[in-house]
Length: 421
Image (cartoon, rainbow, N blue to C red; front, top):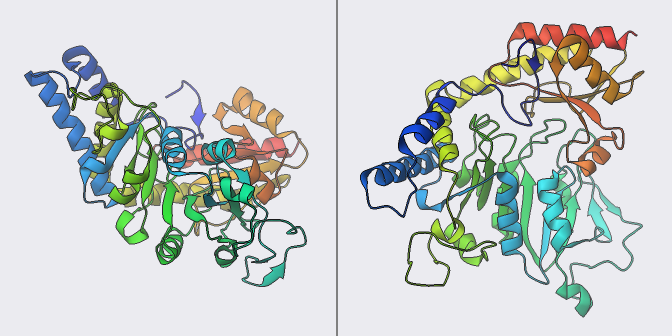
């Protein structure tokens, strides 16, 4: 642990890691060090077996039957880029939410233009309303211009001021060219959970691919790819999975994988007599040398998760969140953002100081009290617009498995002291 510091930035990366994680990585670098799919000697085979076991661990965690469909990447951002840029073609349309991280929005902004909603859409209560700004936008009928047909486009599904997805509006936002829905599982700003099961059923009903960003929930909340009808689950290794930075991946269903164009290609150690990209998984999307020390660390982290239990971890993190929320609500000079209870939320809490600049408050929390938070827009500007916190942003507290109750009380005392100045 950072000497004398209290760490509340687990939504950025969990810290500390289980002791087994750095130990396994150091042992691999010192004593193993082999590549996979290249060497025909025992240590290479041992490393390959460990990588296979890590794929199996991820399949057990996310309830997916085929370990070959687990693709390792550097992080969830790489995974989302691989899926979105590999899938979308000219003319395609995609739905996303107004709460997305830039890991979703920047790839979409690169390849797509944003569409206004159709003339009639629904609000969060399901009430149909007229859209006064809808003149000239693409409608569900096939009256769009040829130029619009050639564009990739996206539409944001509206969310409430608490960050909750307005599912009643989704039907009205479909177009004949809608191909997929991409959705975060939980907001990295306010922690609100999205209804994956409901959206997965919607996607299956309409023949859409369902792509999920599980950056804030993998390893903390149950994710069942089969039950939730997820076609691509994108995850990172260094947050709730408790692994090292530089690890992540995605799990792809075969049908979606067949439609993705690889963004990067190169040597895989397989089919080396050919210059074409392999057609089979995971090699099709794993060119070059993997981050094997990182995967070894992730393997140790996943073993820790299995031994400890995701339910136990989630219960503790939400208990800390509940304690923080209940007492923070009573502090004058503090504005909590989003839900103020632990229903339908991850252990992420954003707040604003009413009489002090957020950045100054975050600076004082560290300098005077040793409390580490994250301040700003959290790479999610439209989420802050939805929550009414743009452009000022928020101070974010995010709690982890290794935080303690006394640390929460210390943070609350510090906030109270700052708010009273």
